[in-house]
Image 1 (cartoon, rainbow, N blue to C red):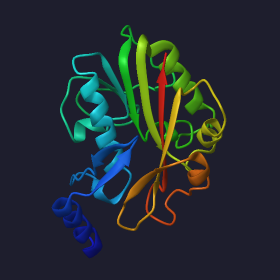
Image 2 (image 1 turned 90 degrees about the vertical axis):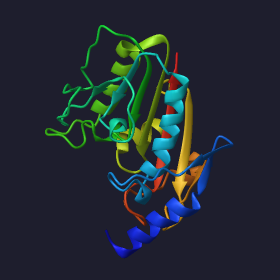
Image 3 (image 1 turned 90 degrees about the horizontal axis):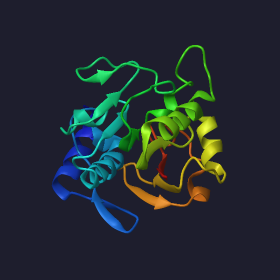
Image 4 (image 1 turned 30 degrees about the vertical axis):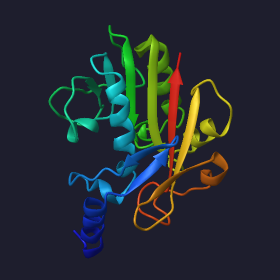
Length: 211
């Protein structure tokens, strides 16, 4: 690790800084796997772990193999590329399951669908969201996703307009080299660039869909 990364790690571990989201305080998440204190994982993980508590004992699907690197809980995982125990290696745009899930989670994964694949299919991320809502979510289920603003133009255009894809839309913006974040409006985050001026996400979208 670089000297600055070490300093930042101990800053978060010792002083335990927090951020506000929907007027609730969350502590930044610090874990040595993928050094979460350096990027958007610091805010994504605590938000998604909090949601898991609301659905304890329910049917849960995660798109992208993220959370089992940080915690253990019974749930299904779909990840097209990552080979790991218990992970279903299928394309989420076409994934079918006999289950209907009470909660579907996806942490900074959907922005890669159709963009970081060959051939490129920019609209495929929308197909994936439609599939999750239309074919995988239970009638009273909830979808919670995050992705960086400025990475996938198709998704940026989606969240810029009123759409049935999400019933709730929230935004976080990184404002410090020390990886501090604050909740902002779309207007304040819409011009965010990926990996500039800070590494990885500089603006973050949190989307909720409830039937």
